[in-house]
Every structure is written in C-alpha cells, then in structure tokens.
Image 1 (cartoon, one colour):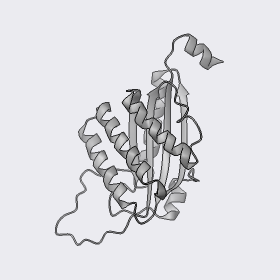
Image 2: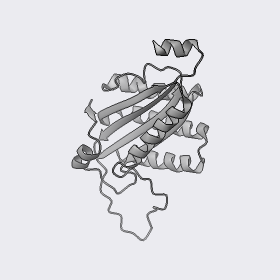
Image 3: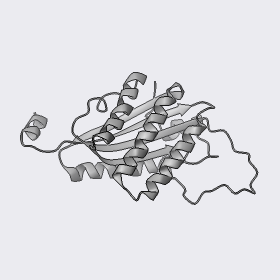
Length: 197
C-alpha cells in the first residue's frame, strides 16, 4: 500500500541490489583479466558513472559468454523512497563486499619481468555486482538462482546503463589479482549465501 501511495505522491523509487556469481573451472582465468582491466579503467575514471556503466556492460557481456562456468549465485536488495537511505545501503554493501576474501584490488601490484612465471591457475572466481537505480526492474528484483533468470538479470543491468537509470555501480571480485587463489573452503567461509545454480 505504501508503494502505491509513494507513486501517487510522485516520489522516486530507488532500488539497490547486489548479485554474487561464482564461476569455477580451469578456464575462468581470462575473466580475471577482464575484471582487473575494468577495475583499472573504473579507478582512472574517478567515479564517472558513464564510464563505470560501460565497464559494467563489458563485465556482464563477458559473464554471459562464460555461462558454462557458472556454479552458484546469490542476490539481495531493497527498495527505498529516500535517496539518502539508498546511498547508505550502497555504502553498507560496498563495505561488506570489500571485506570479503581477496576483494581488495591492489593498484600497486605489477609483475616484474625478472620474476619467474609460476602462477597458480585460478579455479574459482566470485564476482559481486552492486548497483543502485531508479524505477522498477522486475528482472533484477526477483530470485536469480537459476541460470535463465540470472541471464535476464545481467541483460537488465546492461539495459539500465543504456537507459541512464543507474545511480551507483560497484564491482568487487575475489580473488582480486592473478596469482591469488580462492579455495573451496574460503568460498564456504566468505560466501556462505551462494546457492548452486
């Protein structure tokens, strides 16, 4: 009833949602390269929402191409009628995502040419996509714990960027850099909400 009342009063509806996607397999390492490149672009953009949106689109398109490696997922979110409350929730999710294992992106990391090349193969990657947007997008406000719903949800994120409805974008991933590993035990410890697809 309050949603109807708020719409009638002309209030703006803000939605904040976070999607976790766990990919597993010996062929997921290229995704980590895309994530690291988009992270550098995002940092260089100094928060430019248009550039962040373009990077989000690239990540979503990459994930859609690698759907055979999707293993588990979780999603959560909330609706707000107050922009400040929505912003507080975005900050809360940012802090939570950043505190998870290996989700801190290290800009100073660079492999030297004199280092021997013996990097363990990344077999698990968890990507955390957090967005805030205006309006109503049922494809993102539903249970995304099946592959088809998740594909539709990722396409909905792309559409939100194209329609200029995104108000905040955050991407975290674990492990955050090539050479780090995310073990099955760490998956259970740091990402207990994941549901098999």
